[in-house]
Length: 147
Ligand SMILES: [Zn+2]
Picture 1 (cartoon, protein in one colour):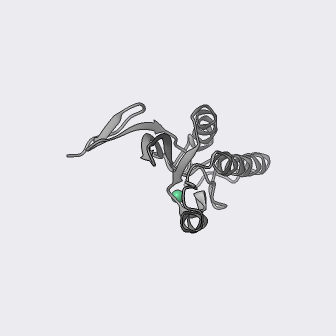
Picture 2 (cartoon, rainbow, N blue to C red; picture 1 turned 120 degrees about the vertical axis):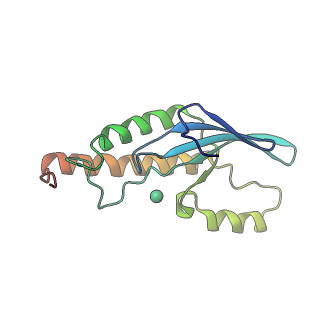
Picture 3 (cartoon, rainbow, N blue to C red; picture 1 turned 90 degrees about the vertical axis):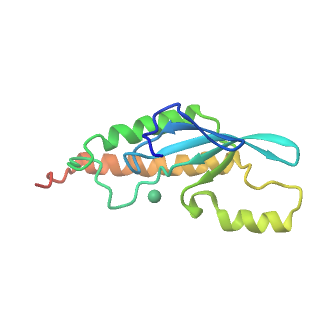
C-alpha cells in the first residue's frame, strides 16, 4: 500500500506511532516525524528530523526546478523552532553526531546520548545561519534562471 502523507498524518508500525510534520527545503518532500520512545522505563518525545542543511550548490534564488525553495526553508526553520527537539535522530549521520553517540552508549551506560536538546538546536541553528548567508549572497548577485 502506498499513499501520500500530509501534515499531521499519523502512521503506525505495530505499537509505534509517528506524526508527520512537513519540513520542506532540503528537498520538497522533506518530512520530520515525531514519536514517543520508551527507554529504561521512561517515555521520551523523539523527532526524526529531515535535514535542514543547505548544500553549497543549492540555488535559493531563481530556482526553476523548485521555485518556492527559499520560502519553504524559512517556513521550516520557523516550524522547527516551535516543535520540541530533545531526543532526536537525523537523516544524515553527521546531522546528529551518530558515531560519537554510539561511542557514548558504550562508554557511559545509563546515559542516553540521543537525548541532546543542545545538539538539536545547534544543528538547526547552524543550518539556518548557512541558509541566511547563502540567501543574502544569492539575492545580492542573482544567477539568471536556467532555461
Ligand atoms: Zn540530505
